[in-house]
Length: 124
Image 1 (cartoon, rainbow, N blue to C red):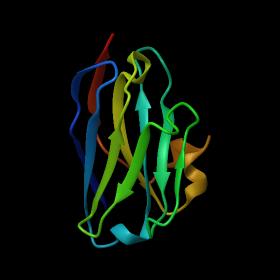
Image 2: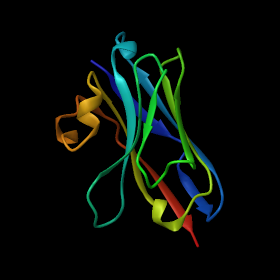
Image 3: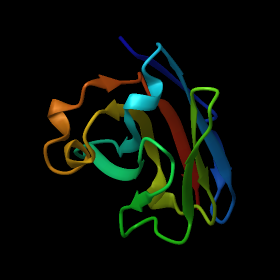
Image 4: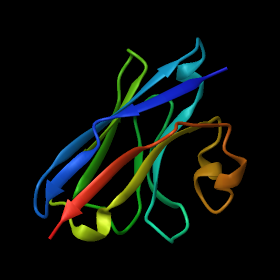
C-alpha cells in the first residue's frame, strides 16, 4: 500500500516558479514509477511528467519540456520544479505511482495510486 500526499501549490504570477512535493508512505516506494498529472477546470486530467524507479530517466509532456523538472530522493519524496509558469499551467496537480511507465500514457485510469492533489494558480 502506498499513500501519496502533495504539497507546495499556491498562487504565482506568470513567469514565476513553484516547487511541488509528493511524500509517499509505504515500504515499496522504490518499486514504483512516480509522476505528476494535472487537471484544469472543465478539462480532462493530463500527463505532466514521470520518473523511473531509479530516478535515472525522466519524461515530460511537450507542454512543459524545458520548464519543469521532476526528481525523486531516497526519502520517499518526488518533486516537480516548475519554472517560467504560464496561466495555462493552472490546475490541480496530482502525484501518481505505478509499477509501469506505460500507465502514465493514455491508460492512466489504471494507475495504482493517486494523491488528492494540490492547486496551482498562475495569474497573468
